[in-house]
Length: 273
Image (cartoon, rainbow, N blue to C red; front, side, top):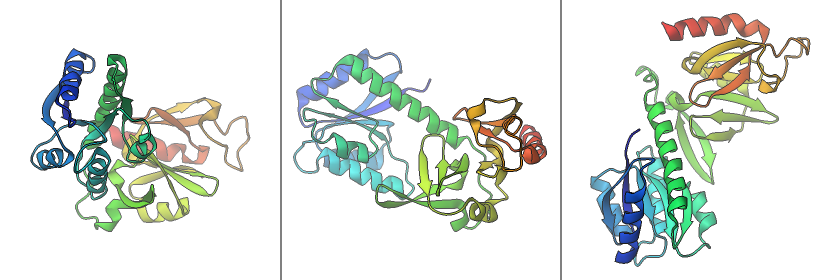
């Protein structure tokens, strides 16, 4: 397991000392405090020149506060830059909603208990592992155009581009389409058929309601659980759900219609090759 590199940001020296001692006491996941900062501006300056995996971030500080620092990191992330995860550590519970809008891993109130900190660090470690898994995915063909490499979504009122190489599948549900990555789900407007027309070289139609990244198909199984999806309109209810594929990274099963079984087998053979 990779060591979680942590930046502690708090304007109170004693608070930083206590947090460091709590982190040092955590052995699972393995963690290391790589730096400390007393203000948001100091932390931002450090992050411009250094890297870490997680920021333990106080909210109320002089100058740039924790929410402002987190917002600046969210903007960098939306622009495609790698940024650390955030766990807020504060004496005030009133900022929790805003913190989670900024995609914080957790929100801890002072005095922090070691068990709560360890749970937050475990979630951060899991998110780190998911990110590492995504980075191991096959590279996108350089011949593709820049626009074809991304899906534009609306995330908490902001436009955000999700790299196609991160997408595991698209699934139609009611009037919307769910986009699934290793770590998140997003809702899109539009039709699955339009996505298939634009990105059919990378995604395989496995069912009338699902497109799956060809590289993400890991298993095809007969007699899969009946909650994997809805039967096709022209398939008998007792046999339509007898095939499903397992999706890498998220360990989810999606229904495969009988007419698509051969294409899925072909994709699996290509993945193994």
